[in-house]
Image (cartoon, rainbow, N blue to C red; front, side, top):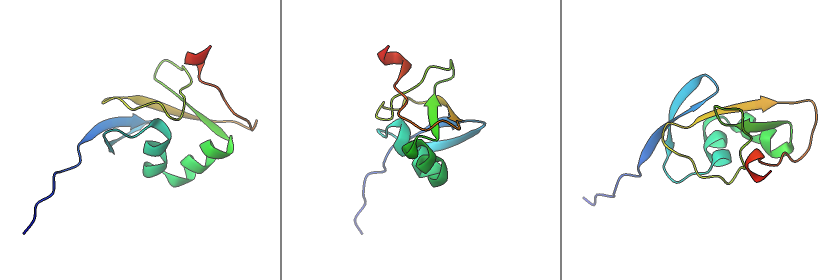
Amino acid sequence: ARSFPKIPSMKIYINDQSFEATAGHDVFTAIGERDPALGRKIASGEAYVTDARGVRLAGNEPLQAGAILRVITTSRKGDFPSDADA
């Protein structure tokens, strides 16, 4: 029997729930993996993501172990730039 290396995972937090995310994923991929409906809201501009400090994150930002992400839904649609880019 062949054995394959285990894909490393890490614990992250989205809103009030913790889960294991695949190491190397970006913010949007991890959220979409955990909650596809929330991922669609982010993709459509109905929501955006912040870190624990409230700083908006870019979707392609790589995750860090222990990351605390907050998904904010809004009635305003549009592209929300990362606060880190300001």
